[in-house]
Length: 114
Length: 111
Image (tube, rainbow over all chains, first blue to last red; front, side, top):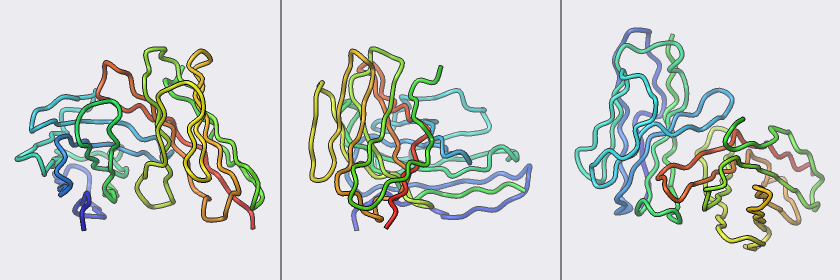
């Protein structure tokens, strides 16, 4: 299946731990994104890479670090997890950065920090 | 003022009715406008996008854009219970790679 996939789907961890979320797309897209959706369903962009180059870096704590080893992969590493990091994290991809390009979303990773 | 505003709802309509979902945006430089549907526990999926003033129709869905009023809406004709979901409006500025999302409107279609 052609899609955007994320692992893990659920992640429960304790405060202070470090965790990673992985994202892969097999759509041949050049651009990938990380979004955070909070408990009020507000979806906010965190990062975006185009051809492995960081093009969007929103005001996000530097505990969050994205890494794009190649165009098909974008991972998110989170250090020293805090309760407020609990949310659903969505990866997305688009063919390019042009304004008409549709973004395809992965299934999401529900992160719960206890 | 939020960049993209939507009424959180829920908007409740009977099956077969027209559901009208509204969105306003603050930046006049916004160029393209997207409607995403998100079922509970699922990821957003694109319904349609619009970038010219006026109406754009796709099946039971019609997007309407009025740049002068900074207003975009989504009409769903012949609403079905399966349309019950949260509808997210997203806006993109020509100069930016970012999609700015509203907080979504929850739609309930009553059988």
